[in-house]
Amino acid sequence: MLLLLLAYLGGVLTIVSPCILPVLPFVFSRAQAPFLRSGLPLLVGMALTFALVASLAAVGGGWVVAANQYGRWAALALVALFGATLLWPRVADRLTRPLVALGSRLSESASGEAPPSVGASFVLGAATGLLWAPCAGPILGLILTGAALQGASLSSSLLLLAYATGAATSMGAALLLGAKVFAGMKRSIGAGEGIRKVLGAAMLAGVAAIALGLDTGALANLSVASTGGLEQRLLAKLGGEARTNSERAALTVTRTNGEAPRLPELGIAPPLDGATQWLNGNRPSNASLSGKVVLVDFWTYSCINCLRTLPYVKAWAKKYGPQGLVVVGVHAPEFAFERDVDNVRKALKDLGIDYVVAVDNDFAIWRAYRNQYWPAHYFIDSKGQIRHQHFGEGNHAESEHVIQQLLRESGVSVAGGVAEVPAQGVQAAADEVALHSAETYIGYERASNFASRPAAARDTATEYTLPRDLRLNDWGLAGRWTIGRERAVLDSSRGRIVYRFHSRDLHLVLGPSSDGRPVRFRVLVDGKEPGEAQGSDVSADGTGVVTEQRLYQLVRQTGQIADRTFSIEFLDSGATAYLFTFG
Image 1: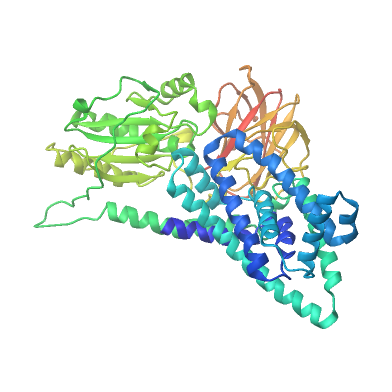
Image 2 (image 1 turned 135 degrees about the vertical axis):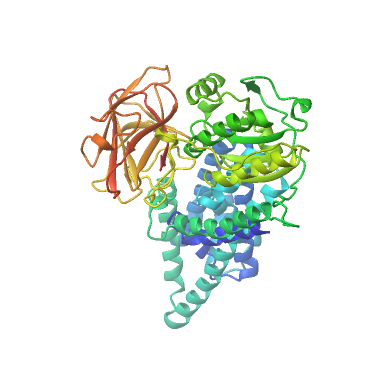
């Protein structure tokens, strides 16, 4: 119920997002007609079409995205026709007979000269839903990501419908308010014909804005009324409370006669079935795990939070392995290059991981555990029961105490205290006090705060230019780039990425050219060589080389943390950029 409420509230907030502005004239065009026959069918058509498109996009793959693009153009044509009939009623008379009838009917319904058609309103709402679908905020992004990872389910469909219903609610409120405003204007100045023409012009302007990509480009990046911050705070509030309650429940203890706290039983651990391959050994058999305490660690090798947690997992495996702890890593890829088993195998060697790791490219184990996070730890007792779970980095001492308790319950004598973990480089803990920049994706599927001009073009080589000044957490490209679903590829011999950030560390997930050719780069901080602020993958003069697909630490500041402008210039074509993370 909490997730459904969160999805609904996220949908309600959609109306104040700038990228929804081009869609509003289509909704207000029905404001003068009776709500039950016009506004309600429009909202139902919009919500159902949006939920359908979003559901298919979550589970259907790339063909659905392509089909939706064609559907958007068809919807734009329909809405443009409707807008033209509002602005110039005689336009309908010049069309062929079937279109004349359709245009006249739409025109008459909008102007109140004829009873509104429920079917026409529903069709207009369906078209609006197609145009609105790409305007997604963080909450919808989480729902779609969960649906894509866990597969089609009733839960995903209900969450998408709740989001669409929330958006329809706020749209409906705007529609009813608009109807009262228009009625008052008509009574006072008889402005019915003028209102109709203004709406027609607004609809055609909206069509132009959407056709030019402003709804998912420039308007989506405006921060004055963007819902991103509102939704993130909502996620932090409700999601944080849910997380706190979950962890509090997992740590609920009972003390009887001075006995140690007892962790609750959270259900039988799912089997470790479905991995596409096992590294550092074979799949642990049920017999080998019987009577053992097991830690299942979900991670992926370019995830900064996972990398900062790994030193502790390795330390626990080394310290408690002889006493009965079995650590099982589950590598669930976030990016396509992390599906390459050779890349994972190399990462295990580079990171010094020697415990067994499942390559979960099909997310079979991920779904079995109903996991949603990188990293995620599941602590399983000697009887096969999940007794504790922890999501994200941090609270390492608490997790180690859980391991100690479960080992004691299995009959092993374990001393207290926690392992000393000398984490360095990218694995050092983040400076939470100075951290005011959040991870930022570069591919168009989840990109935000893109400031270059023109707006991001999907899967098309485009020459981008940077604005003169960047606001905090804005970023952009310079040069000729092709922005794909999860990455951007440099097509010219030189190109830059610039980010205005506030944190101690800056990391960037990068890859060499598609043929594996290394790419040279140079980093500047506030226009100067980084010097002592160099990251572990950069020289003091800012130079470095991208040789493999992984996370690169490019900045680690040692002095006062303030707003800084980061710039990386690639000196060779083919550079691939995926994700910014900070620490």
